[in-house]
Structure formats: structure tokens, C-alpha cells
Amino acid sequence: MSISTPPFSEEHEQLRQSARGFIERELAPHAQQWEDERWFPDAVFPKLAAQGLLGLKYPESYGGQGGDYLHEAVLCEEMARIGSGGTAAGIGAHINIATPPIWKFGTEDQKQRYLVPAIRGELIGALGITEPGAGSDVAALSTRAERVDGGWVVNGEKTYITNGERAHFIVTAVKTSAEGGHHGISFLIVDRCDGVSSSKLDKLGWHASDTATISFQDVFVAEENLLGELDGGFKLIMANFQWERLAMALGAVGAMTVAWERTAEFARQRNAFGRPLSGHQAIRHKLADLATSVYTCRCVTYDALRRFVAGEDPLREVTMAKLLTQRACFELMDDCLQIHGGAGYMRGDSSPQTHPIERAARDARLGPIGGGSDEIMREILGRVLGL
Image (tube, rainbow, N blue to C red; front, side, top):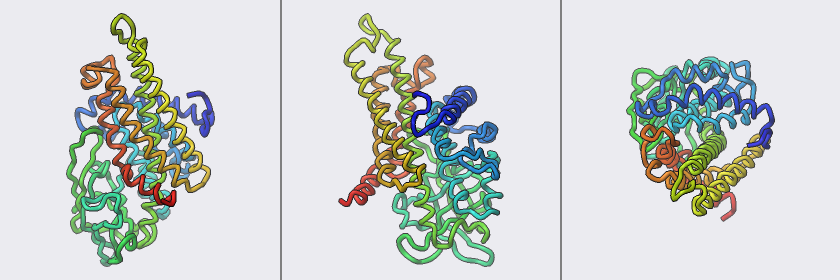
């Protein structure tokens, strides 16, 4: 990428180089270990905080860097260089989906109690919306919060929650009235306490992240932990969907870029039938097609990002970017694995001279499901296009 590629300025590209250097020094060398251990240390969060990477888009008054979504976009792309989708997911869940609702809708007291220590890496957050019987259909939420003196008592269950085991607080969607549909949904900031239990889930990919089912059994939540308006939670859900999906598109673009770079280098170095793999037309043409896919996905994503940062409501463009990049990323990983041949099917630590492409392929499969499945994206586009 050239310097100052729109919508990024030279300042953003300097941040990119700084973040990339930190990631390659401090995080990437541990990727395989964390994948094997099915966990990355909580200490990663304070390390990121010390580099200013947990608060790029947040005001300096709360300990952030005073930047904007473009600064955060740079980090979303660069986290692909960790080499562990699970580690990137755990970090991303904290900075891109758990803390933004507190920043946007929280009281000053809530920001001081949760956002400030979250930016310092002292508290880790999670977002609790999905339930066993309610994924993208948020109107079907069944976790309930019953009014009591001084607050609410919460009962219910959330599932597929990133940071679900480690989180100190869960920004949780609950039903606070008997109204059906999207009405009667509120958000509560639920502290990890008695009555909150987690059960870790085993996954195809993202092994280093702790994805869990969280159960709430008679959990008291104080009045001051109501986030936003009572029964106004659907607005909070929709408010962050655009950035969450844009962040996923940026992450996919970053992952595709890294995989292509490593695969092209492998093809230049690996000899077959007396010449490099890249010297064979079939491989050379496949790499050319993959480079075109990376570029197309970047262009569509950056267009959506420009519109988002400009203050538009780019529902169509963000949805298209999310839909295009997630499937394209998985397909690219499969093609890169094919070019690696047998080495691509081996675990990364079995072939230290190659990119751990088998892990990247497994990690990429989550994209067409998480943050709104491909089918949901097509439904949204169908409505936007008047179909």
C-alpha cells in the first residue's frame, strides 16, 4: 500500500507502521502458543494500552488518543498480522463492540467506571446479545430483567460471546417489558459477580479467544448500570452494527493481504519441475486473480469506510462490504492453502518456513456467520434495494 492511500493520511500510515511493529514484536511470536493453549493472557490488554491502542478513537479526557474511526480502522487491518484470529477477535471484541455503546450512550459515571479502566486495559469487556434461541433475530431475546428496589434482577443466557470467560463486565441486552418485537429491550452493564457463570465453547477456529455461554441466575444489577434509555435498547443494537461489520470487513482485508503476501513469497521460493511455482502459468494466474480479489475487497471496504467517517448512513455500502469480504476471504484462504500443497494442510508449527495457512483458513470461516450472516446481509440489501 502506498503512503496516504485514501481515506488514510500520512499520520494514519505512520500509525500503521507503529502498530505493525508492535504486533510483530510482541504478539505474533506467541500466536502458536496461544492457539495451542486456547487462551491469550489478559496481560495483552495493558500492553496494548501502553501503546495507546485500546483507545485510538476515544477522547483524551477518558485516556484515549483523541483519534477517530480511521485510526481504529488501521488497527483492525493490522491485527491480522498477529497470525491468530482468536487473539485479534478478543482484542476486537473489547475495543469495537463492548466499549463503544458505553462511550456513545453511557452516563459520565458509567464512562468513568467502565470506559476509562477499559482503555487502560484494567477491565475487559464483552457484549452479550446472542442467545441460544435468538441470534440475528434480536426481537426474540428471552433474557429478562425484573424491576426490584434499586435496580433489576437478571435471569437468562447468552451464547457465542467473545471474551465470555474473561470479561469483567458484560454489556447485556435484556427484556425489560412484556412488549413484543423490538420494543421493551434495554441494556444493562452487568459486572462479573455471583450468579454470573461462563462455560467455554470449543470452536473450529479462533482457538485463542474465549468464546462462552454466559448464564445469569438472579443477578442484581443496580439502577445506575442501565445503559441508555429504558426500553430503548434496540437503538443501541443497531447503532454499533455498522461499525462492527465495517471492522470485520477491514479485518478480512488485512487477513487477505497477509495471506496473499506470504503465499506469493512461498510460490517464488518453492521449486517444482525445475522452476519456482510462480513460474507456472496456472499458479501465476491464480495469484493474479487473488490479488484482484484483495484489491476489490479493499476498494469496496474503503468506500464504505469513507462514507461512514463522513457521517453518512452507509447501510447499503457497509452491508455489501461485509457480505463481499467475508466469503472472499475464506475462498482466498482455501486457494492459498491449495498453492501451499501439503505444507498448507500442516499446522503452522509443523512447517515453520511457511505461513500457518491452515489456521487462517479455519479462522476465516467465521466471517460469513459472525456479525450477521451472509443470509442476513442479503436480506438487508434486498430491503435497501427495494426488492
